[in-house]
Length: 496
Image (cartoon, rainbow, N blue to C red; front, side, top):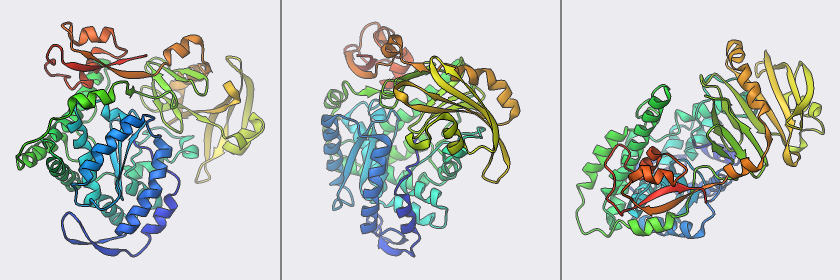
């Protein structure tokens, strides 16, 4: 999930309020009306770049960053906009994602790197994102949405998509921007034509850089394997099957992209260099896998945050959603949740002050107590919503390790959902605790390791790994397919 980037967007909104100008698209050679000429595109991309780094964080591995930048710069030199400055960054995120900002800012997550098999695969991802920039897709999208609201327009420009917290209401409106994010999601992705054009440009840039453009097929197959794995996991757990090819209605299906990329790749012929698989594996050995300790770690039904010193446990069947701004423990039906947010230091000198200043209740009752030795205050009451109508409110404040205070909202779609979830909400709340020695052991971060494929196959590797056999197959691109040859280097996940 790409989170909406909050600061500096007023500048972007102000920019887009202008009348626009005419530029020549460097890819098509055609004139187009835009709200972003090249100078403005570069300037605003630079401002937004700082927000991306703040939101995600840069993966702290100088060697890997230099490697990705080297490949990115090589591809950019072969692009239609080789003259602009390009910046390539590996983000400290487990998401399987890559995206671009206008002005030559390209981001690739460590999550997607873990699922690549070669340097050429990685180049395919980067080349696609370069294509979005060279064809000025971000500027085109911003121009089309010029009349949209600030939140939608800013998110469109940055390519930010916030998934809907469907069915959950209450405290989300007070602390999040869910409505803004949902609206942004419908306009934030590129059109079908833009995605397919970026694929075609990526293939062209790969061929110019002596990478086989057919490696872009491998990238789309990674996405298809993710779909297949998600379906398999849903069936195994008895959950509803995820919608296939559901990357917003405007996004071309992976099957369509495979066909298009195959057709584009067939246009090129020549002598291509090695796919760089060996060098790529050397670079990603030891790569952090999954969530990072700085972001908090989810292990089965437990959440651990070593930096803040606390842990929580979700009831059986509930799921944990860990985001930069909040921890949410969600009911199996998705219509209720416990949302945990840090309280700013200046919110008040006591729990009563914090509730009064932050929640602004109209009426209610405070009940003081403790949760696993930490001072806690439970509040049940009424507050006015954005329309001035009374809104039921239930929340608990707890001051935990290192004197950090957290606000735990009981969220529900309606009174019936709240009643069904009440026992689980209270159980999740009461699980708040200081990290024990056992918790700290479980909270060790995971990393990629390499090993030759053994005779015992992935079942043998799973005994040496912290993830399942199927997850290892997905990680190595063999889920639902044949095993790799004996002795071939493959990836596994360990807790060093």
